[in-house]
Amino acid sequence: MTLLKIVSSGLAAWVFGFAWYILWSKPWAASAGARPVPKTNSGILRPFLLSALALMIAAAGLYYLFDRAVIVTVVEGSLFGLGIGAVLILPWIAITHLYPGRPAVLTLIDGGYVVGGCGIIGAMLTTF
Image (cartoon, rainbow, N blue to C red; front, side, top):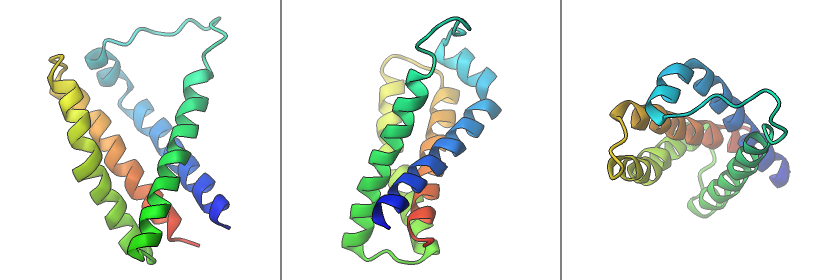
């Protein structure tokens, strides 16, 4: 059951990220300086697979924290996840965007994803 919680939570955050970055694709690409990936690129799936794996690792970490802190309800899980995203991860994202002089909109987009994704992982970990 634990592995199922971790995998499903990570995948739920990945799906959220997929939708989030589709919604914000134009301002994100402009502010990040991203270039379109050629359709013939055989490595196009690599970032998608690695990001799914990374989110499962994040979900495993949150699962451990939830277990130690006895976070058991969906409300607690959501709020704790949102809090972890907002006060532990978002500041580091802001710092890594600040020093190279990246636009604030990039921090808002990436930060919104981190906070929302952590909230989703927290909710999913406490759902079943």
